[in-house]
Each structure stands twice: as structure tokens, then as C-alpha cells.
Image (cartoon, rainbow, N blue to C red; front, side):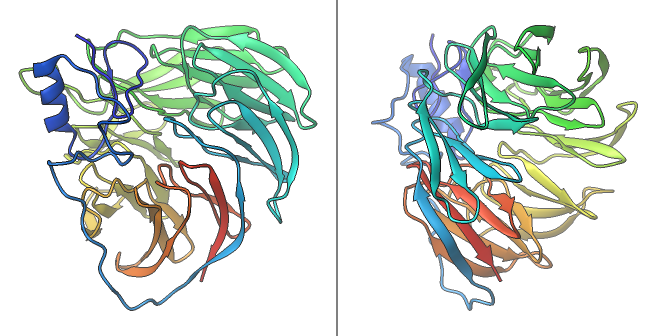
Length: 401
């Protein structure tokens, strides 16, 4: 039996993509043995006939989004594509392989090249003078900042994410669950981390968070690992969430987003599972709480900010997991992971709206409608504001005051 993701694309015959209201859809796929397609499922991650997206309501604005500049970079197709920001430029890619460099201040195109592959990774990556993209067939391409190809490499299957370049290494996640450590100078493989995966896994673009020479990554089956960037040595592994239920669908409990890391702890959240935090040095458990999430989290000072699988946006105390506030106005709107910008928590949704919440209490402060369809990935901070890419390939630089 083949299980496809919401977009009808998958890493293997056993991969599913998460989203709100997904349980009914997966049950229907099991019964029918049919894969979903772009034509039968809307772009947003909910399911028609299951839970209707919450209607947006009027509110008194206490802040305002302003567009600093706007440009088109090309359709993202079925994948989540996010630009890379360096001190000198923005690098962005379209799903069909157009890679471009943009001016940070104006969004003006500096150069554009066709890389010759269908880009599949969750983001363009950069660092140490390199710009990297990954493809559906496992290709990894590295260019310099003047668009000259430096090297090509290949990993074991479709590239799901590429890390920033750190200490001369590039870490590449592939759809089969492996992480490959590549030498940034020539693309040669230095090490590979791999582990067994459950029979059924969620298709995701979960990335790798690197801090002080250690890479932290979550995996199918609810696992979290700390791996040495230099040589791939496993420093520790921990269980974020134990699979529960009687069927393979019910037992999916995958970490499908990036962990969050500070100086004391590393935390991750699992789809159909829970959030759990661990001591950063030993992996010893600190606390956990039953919250399901597939979009990711952000930590700032004493709070975690996250979106659960229903579309609730929450602030949690990072030492205990207790709820500081919860905004339930975006149910089934497929809202992104939050980004915290000064006094605001910002999320996007399936209709292309960007919402600014008050960081202190979660109340709505501002809203803006962007062109180009769904916003599927969290905003990026840039120059005291935000950089947002829509699924239709529109790239916005915004401020919020």
C-alpha cells in the first residue's frame, strides 16, 4: 500500500506529511489504498469536510506590518523553501531549480542561475562563502557567492534539509533518515549517521540545529540525538515521545521539526506525541508534556513559543512546560511555527495572512495579507524585521511596530 503526503509527493512508499485534520485523510487512504494528489487536496494542510478553518475576526490593531520591499523568486512547488540570509545578501531558490542572489536592502536581483535539478530541500543553506541547494535525487550542489559551482555531491536519497556550514562541515539530511557529514571544501563524505525507522513515517523537512560543535536532530519514532559535527560520533540519544496506539497510523510519533537549544537544555516536539526537554550535556530528561506539534518551536528568554497540530499558538514556561498563554483563533488554518520579533509573536497561515500577536498575552496586534498563496514556513529575522516567502514564490521584507 502506498501512502502519499498532502501534496502527493513522498520520500518513500511509507512516508506521510503532517497537517491539521490529517487523521481522517490517513484513515481514508488506508481503506482505499489511494494516494492523494494536488488536485484532490487543497494547498493548506487541513482536509475539506473534516474541520473547517477558523474564520478571521475583526480586532483593534495595536501595531502595524509595513512592507519594506517585495519581489518574486519562483514557485516553491510542493516543498517548503526558505531563503538564506547572510551579512551581504539573500539567497533564494524556486522548486524548479532557479537559484538567485538578492540585495538585502532592496530585494533587487544580483544574479540568477539554473542549477539543473528539482530543488527539494527545506531551505537554501549558506556559510563560509558557500551557497548550497539539494535535490530530489540526492544531489547536493555548492556554489560560491558569485554563482560559480564549487562542487557536487550525492547522498543516499532525496535531500530533506541542509545545515548551515559550520567548522568546515555541511550536514545533509535525506529522506531515508540518514544524516551525512560532508567536507565543505570538496563535498566528500566524512561520516554518516543512520538509524532504523518505523514502518510508517511522516514526510517532513526537519532540520539540524548546531551549537558549539554539536548537531541536534529529531527523528521518526520520537527520537532525539546529539551528534558531533566533526566526526559523527553519537554523544547521546533520548526519547521525546513513545509511539502509542494499536495501528501503525496511531503509532506515528515523529519529530518533524527542528529542536530548540539554549545553554542548558534541548527540547523537541513530536507529531501525535509530546514536547520534551533534556539536559544539553548528557541528554537526561528534565520535563515533558503531552502536546502534539509538527511545525516547530522558538525559545526566547524564559518561554517557548509553538504552534500545535490543531493551530493553537502557545507560550510555555521553558523550565516547567506550564502554559503562559494560548491563542485559539487559528484552528485548522495551518499556521506556521512562530517567530518572535521584539514584542510580537508572528505566524503565517494557508491564506497568506501574516498575524502579529502580543508577546505578553498572545492577543492579536496586527495582520497583513500577502500575495502568492500560503505561508508554509516560519518567518526569518532580518535587519530588525522579517523575511517571509510564500508558496507561490513571493518574497517579502517587512517591519512590525
